[in-house]
Amino acid sequence: MYQEKYSVVAGPEGFISPAAAMMGVELPDRGQALIEGEITSQDQALSHIAKKLLGAKNPVIFPGPLLLWNWSKTVGKKAALIKELAQECNAKVIPMADYRPKYPKINPEVEINPNHPNITIWHNEIDVCIFVGVHCHYANVALKLIRAGTNCYTIALCAEAGHEDAMVSLRDVDENTIDSLLKTVKAAKTND
Image (cartoon, rainbow, N blue to C red; front, side, top):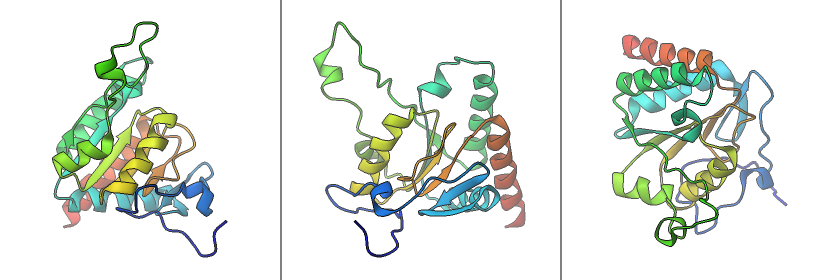
C-alpha cells in the first residue's frame, strides 16, 4: 500500500493523485484537525489557516450550497462570518455551482460539462482556497482534482468529519469555529 509517510501538499501531483486515505492519512477525532496529513489540535490548525490566508496573493473562499441555501437557523450567521472573514483577509468569494443533478430533465450543456474547480483555480490564479458548505462527496472529488493539477493550497471547513485530501481540514465546523478563525486572523494581523 504505502511505504513512507505521505504529506498532503499542494501539487501539481500528477494526472491522478492518490487518495490521501489510501496513503495512510486518517481523519482527526473531535477537537482535532489535519495539517498536510498530520493530526494536530484545532487551535494549531486555526493559526496555520490564518497564516496561509494572510500570506496568500489571491485567496478565495468557495461557499457551497450548504452555506448558500439558508436551510437551517445557523446558516445565516455562518454566512455572515464567512463574508467578514473574506473581507478581513482580502479574499474573493466565488460561490460553488449548484452541482446537484437536475432529474428528470437534464440540460446537457450544463450537466455533461459540470464545474471543474481546478479550471476555476487555473483561470483565477488562486494560491489558497477555502471550501465551506460543500457536500462531502463533492468536496472529496474536487480536492483531489485541485491537488492533482494545481499548486493551490486547499483548506476544508467541514461540518462533518473533515477531508483528508485537503492540505488543512477542520471538522465539526459551526459558527463558533468560524468565529474562532475570524478572531485568529484578526489577532495575526495585529501581531504583524
